Image (cartoon, rainbow, N blue to C red; front, side, top):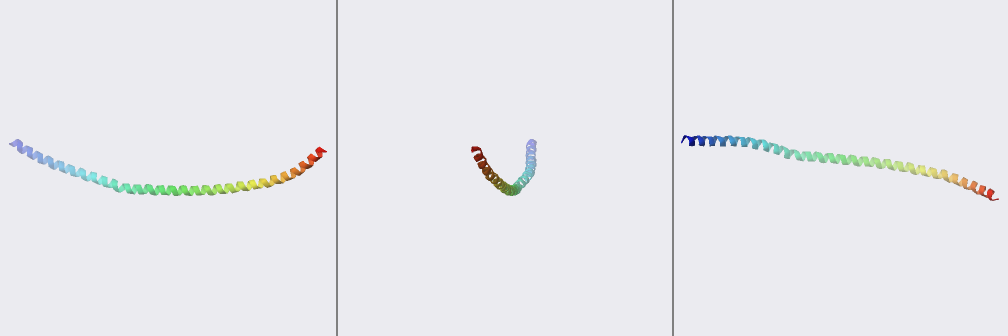
Length: 107
């Protein structure tokens, strides 16, 4: 009968210790899970904010690049117009000279 009394006492002590260990582990793990769940939305918000800032910076840099390209295109168009005017003057003079020269050569 002493074995039964020892078994019952050990069983109760084991159940108490197991329950205590289980309660502590449950509390610790539930706190970690709660922190993880609570921190995920803030991390997601942080990521979204960073993505918005990055897209805004990208849009700003694209706008700056577009304006810069427009300036370069305007400069190139101006240079082309200047060269056309110069070549038009040269070609106009050259045609007159060439026409006279070819007439002189034909004669």
